[in-house]
Image (cartoon, rainbow, N blue to C red; front, side):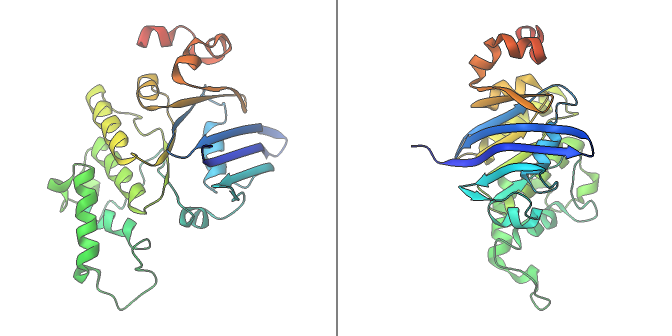
Length: 253
């Protein structure tokens, strides 16, 4: 029997009288690459923020590896093995690429609240930082300030920070938004590599990316999951086509 990494049961979220997430049930298996798609206003970002602890739930449960995590603080969920990126790039622009990755490693490598430890002298920390820079193909940019990187490089750096914490569940919010075709291809291959043997959950609008990366796809429409299946079955689902995909998916594939 497959292990469930994330399980949502009857999940709801209201903002005042507006019900945004309306009873979502969803199971994501360990090691699966899972995409959440849907039209604008469907509630994708709200669902993402509920899972990662940014929003409190109005009803229902969220479990990680069988343990309830709904309404925990984001850092508590992170320390249980979930790390996320953001729709808007979230890096330290005045620090170097190397320093950004190193910051992401501090807690997981045991460097917590210590005012007496000189991180520049920690060989193991520097070695692991260099390993991640190699993974994200940014070794040659290690001494550059993050703020001068191109947009695509900043997104790659953020993915590096996301995986630096050693989480086994990686959540990416529109990782290829605003990229050219070639930049998108590079990021897709990067994501494929760094999430190997991990659970990946992503919100993404680019159907080429979704159908290239995802093992399973869930379609969210008006706060409800209307389909959750393999890419082939989702593509062929008449209800999904009517609600979201339409003929665009045939044009792209």
